[in-house]
Length: 282
Image 1 (cartoon, helix red, strand yellow):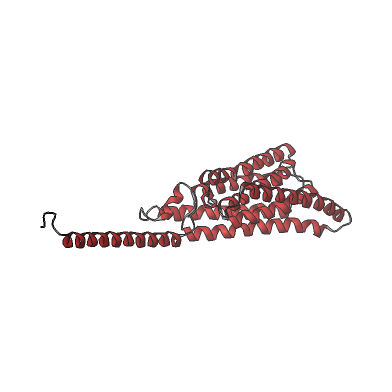
Image 2: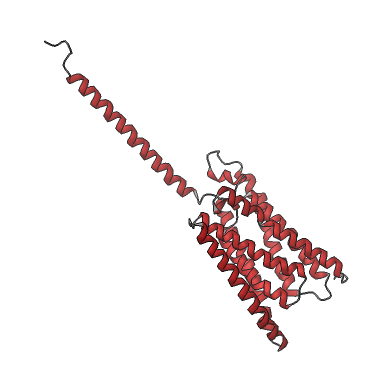
């Protein structure tokens, strides 16, 4: 156990806040530029569960009087995950800007109401000795964040590689987890559930990076026409190879129809030329 040091704990907490807050910004920018939800390399289900985790952990961090940077980070992370979710609706479900803005505003209002109500209820429960109710927020957030990485593993298995923007994200996520763990150890009392939470995330993030080290070199040996090679620069596949095969099949059918039409046109021209009498016929 490290010696308690409030200043060092604050520095580590601030560092984790900055890292986590900026880690999700590159996927948001990439998705905005490409106008597709799949370009950010993160599963939409992963983002949804992380938003749920932030929804639960934000009031818990205030009830337990954790470091201010951690409190700010959880609230900011929820806002950023909501932006990513709205991007999914905007680009994948063809929501208009007004519809997407209304959804975003609704998510923020719901979060504000839930956050304030949970803080008052949690503090009252803590004062009356019902610590289990407060702990339920943390365990729920931990479960949501851990389960949120499972769809990401499924996405990686389907694409047989890890998108470059995802690698950057998870490297920053690991560093943020390490900073938070150090911050917890520098406090007078170790918050064991929080330690387990950040440690679990760190282990899963490292697992994704290990998969990237194994799968990406193998993926680079694929044929040039394999659509999964596009993950080197952007993000995920448009969906999978099935859509590409269907489009390819439709393209071939169109080419065959055009070729048949050209052949019929040539045949009609030959018949017309053969049956037409000479111009000097008397």
